[in-house]
Length: 420
Figure (cartoon, rainbow, N blue to C red):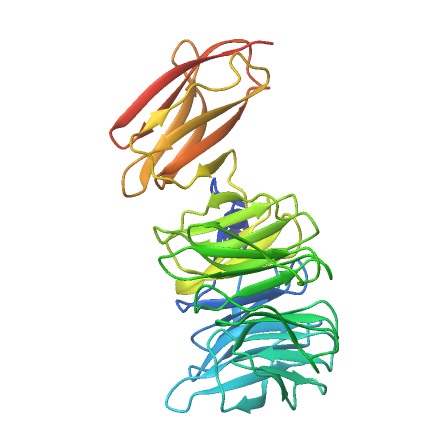
């Protein structure tokens, strides 16, 4: 029996270390409900809340998840922890008596107390605590507590759905059809900074520091919008080049940030910036489940959650290994382009187009002059779009090589030369 348990443990560990080419590992949540949010207090201990009233916990970085709370009368929208053992969850009570509810634990989720119920409710509520006593709750209007969540009072009525505080006093909230409001006195007064969002959809907001911040907003089947400010919200700029529904944005430092979105073909898409939001690179995650929330603890380690019990983890920054989508337009034809530079030493780029209306199983393989396979650069289903792959030939000798693209009924081969 001991050997069987050890074998199973090894299998679980190997599964956790096995990456798909998109850089994300699927984790077993054990439930089939929509997972709305996640929060990790360190690289090992994390929590997640579901629409089925579940609060899940992991103590090994997500390799295994187990339930620490379950009440089908509730839907858990958000979880937030100050320490590994003290945290809160917010959600709403399902019909016939629809109300917002706040839960609290002081023993790492072993027990939860219902500490607050409000007759006003909102889907997509968020909760934040700056310390053990001071917290804010966005649940249709913005509420504040000064006694750890036992009592709450309204500080702003703005149909709030997004909230972000840098500290106890300075914070921002976003609301449907209102935009962004800011406080510098702990919510006693608010200034509307950006008065209009294009769509009546919940927005997410994140500030790197007191000057630089971002807000995202969008609508199903339409454009996603990214708003950014470099002066604390006095002025906001708009970028609507994202043709997908953006629903979560997070930064781990002043340069590196991530946006989670639902793509046009119902695929999960992740956009990453490494220059403070000046440029964003799109990465497909190749999952058709609806994304819910994104959480990163460092540049490389993060989790995303979503529909049907979805929990995925990355330890390489969430980027596609060797391949990235460089365009969102649907090409009229399949194409394989000449690599550049060519000849090259030691690396080159290979660009190709995937056409059609559905995902195609795609292979990009490198062969030597004798026709022997030496490298598989792509082996996955790709949505229609423009792609580029990096090929590093540091471990290959000089000579003539061929690379072949196969997708659906399309196949094309080109020649490249390694010169050392």
